[in-house]
Amino acid sequence: MTAAPRPRELPNVDLDAVAAGIRSRIETWTRAGLDVSALTWRDARASWPQPLPTERAEVIEPESVGVIVRATDGRSVELVLWRGGWTDGFVHTTAGSVPLMADVTDFTDVASCLRMVDESIELLTG
Image 1 (spheres, rainbow, N blue to C red):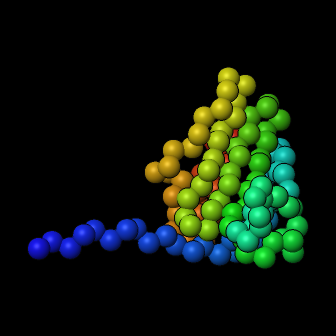
Image 2 (image 1 turned 120 degrees about the horizontal axis):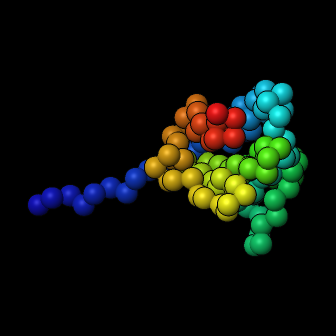
């Protein structure tokens, strides 16, 4: 008898640490000519439709943190980083929007999440 496969356990990534990592990069991104939005938060405990406040203090249980980074030529990267280890991400160009591929945007911890963020922003600077 073969045991049923176990479902993949999702990480519980510290979004406060992810946000701190993003904030530590903003000055570098700004010097590179990029415009960075305020971080937005989604609260797992908020009722539907869940608001997206920019103040962390308004969130009891962070479920996601988001940021939009824009280049002067109109291109941008939009990222929503989920504590469960995945990203909803889009690259917007003058020709349209392209989602970032899931196999590139999954992460297991803060370090791998911030590496993915850096790689996404390189699409604007590289």
